[in-house]
Amino acid sequence: MNAKQLINVLPDYTCTNNIESIEIEQIEMDNRQIKTNALFVCIKGYTNDGHEYAAAAVESGAKLIVAERELNVSVPVVIVPDTSRALAQLANTFYQQPSKRMNVIGVTGTNGKTSVTHIIDQIQQQATKKTALIGTIKMTIDKTVYEVKNTTPDALFLQNSFQKMVDQAIDVCTMEVSSHALDLGRVHGVDFNIAVFTNLSQDHLDYHESMESYLHAKSLLFSQLGNTFDEKQPKYAIINEDDANATFLKKATAQPVLTYGVKHNATFQAVNVKLMASGVSFTLKTPEGDVLIESKLMGMFSVYNLLAAAAASYAAGIELTTIQAVLNATSGVKGRFQPVEHSGDFGVIVDYAHTPDSLENVLTTIKCFCEGTIHVVVGCGGDRDRRKRPLMAEVACKYADNAIFTADNPRSESPQAILEDMVDNLSYENYQIVPDRETAIKQAIEQANDKDVVLIAGKGHETYQIVGDQVLDFDDEQVAKKYLSE
Ligand SMILES: CC(=O)N[C@H]1[C@@H](OP(=O)(O)OP(=O)(O)OC[C@H]2O[C@@H](n3ccc(=O)[nH]c3=O)[C@H](O)[C@@H]2O)O[C@H](CO)[C@@H](O)[C@@H]1O[C@H](C)C(=O)N[C@@H](C)C(=O)N[C@H](CCC(=O)O)C(=O)O
Ligand SMILES: Nc1ncnc2c1ncn2[C@@H]1O[C@H](COP(=O)(O)OP(=O)(O)OP(=O)(O)O)[C@@H](O)[C@H]1O
Ligand SMILES: N[C@H](CCC[C@H](N)C(=O)O)C(=O)O
Ligand SMILES: [Mg+2]
Image (tube, rainbow, N blue to C red):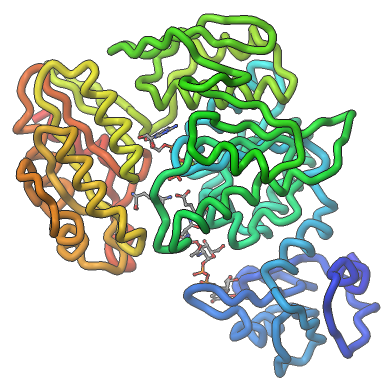
């Protein structure tokens, strides 16, 4: 693509050189990935400043640099006020606005994004659509699975992935949209057709600092649906009516809103909800009549996830009978309330609860059916929201009989210091501190008697433990199986 044509999409730039003769074959934000005829965008990150890699980028084949300040390099430099924003605009143009050429469903909220996106994707597949999925666990484009570093990737990776999807004639891409991504502009320019809100509770205050700014970040997904109506392809906001922020989020969008909920009247409402040891059942009230849902998924939080997926799929034009069939058949996602198979007479569950709210939801769900003692193994991530640590410890002790506090991705922090943050002002005494996660799991399994349940929380599908800069192999399910078989 011609450089001048590409750069001209930026509303605000200066460049003193003539760039009309430059042809761009690649946009890059990492100098190590440059192949040839590249446009290198300098991003000031949390760890590195991309401006410092501009010279190395030129050496590797960059023909043009986009930066926030003048640089001493041998190729033209385009100066913009905000390179992250420019990157999103450039990538969107370079890949020919790929998100406009398929349906994109974005799901945001503190908890439930991975669960809801997977159910929506299954419904779309059942309706014989060709699908893509982007989120915490992986990205899939039709049958091909790709590893992802972030729940919502950076703008460049994202737009490049959308182009791959267009090349493969994907009908619908369902993606998790994290609050970090919204705040950092990773999804700028993405043409969402449907935006879904699951819920808001405390997390990520290390990044957003207050619940107000966390909510504001979430609301950006709904304002991004735009102000104009397209009658051929209407856009929808799908909002959890039972969440305290429902009214605020409805105001953030000009598009039609479909609501879902249990406690309040909603477009999609669950009534006669039964929470059982084998799953949940409820009558789903919809604009087209009532249908019975009998799902293997556990707990009230799953009712909300099923409702969110149903409402989003209905807005996407899927038949109610198809939606019902998938809600009744879906067996959930790896590491989300996942039972560990073994021959003993007590339950072992691996779950990704890493916020106070999700931990409470999972423990209260277990309380509904557990006839014995509840043991929970849980920790808090390093370099993440410190303010959730005491809250998670409190929830663990309040709802479980025996809490074992341990390490969960301490990253650059001392595991001991994280554990101290958890228990420093704790008024409960039904806990033990076992910093080594493997020992903690072993101990919980040894302490469990018949009819008890052991919940191993926080890491879900993760197959690693991040300690300092090291990513060590660690899989809660595998470790549990090792001690269950002894
Ligand atoms: C805080 C944050 O979001 N960091 C993200 C950020 O990393 P960073 O700011 O440290 O980047 P950096 O290393 O300083 O690099 C800055 C620039 O220099 C460039 N560079 C760097 C080194 C070099 O040798 N050459 C070079 O060109 C880099 O390519 C980049 O363009 O940019 C990276 C590339 O896009 C992200 O992978 C990384 O996410 C890290 C891994 C992360 O943990 N993020 C979390 C907080 C996050 O975003 N989480 C949400 C999910 C939350 C949830 O749902 O619970 C998510 O969406 O994943
Ligand atoms: N609707 C919900 N409300 C509250 N808790 C939930 C809900 N759905 C799932 N959970 C709990 O939260 C955990 C994480 O669920 P899930 O992975 O679907 O959320 P997520 O929003 O994708 O999380 P992340 O932001 O880390 O990617 C689950 O293991 C479960 O404990
Ligand atoms: N997406 C979340 C995942 C947390 C998972 C938990 N195991 C941890 O490392 O804190 C985050 O990056 O905050
Ligand atoms: Mg997720």
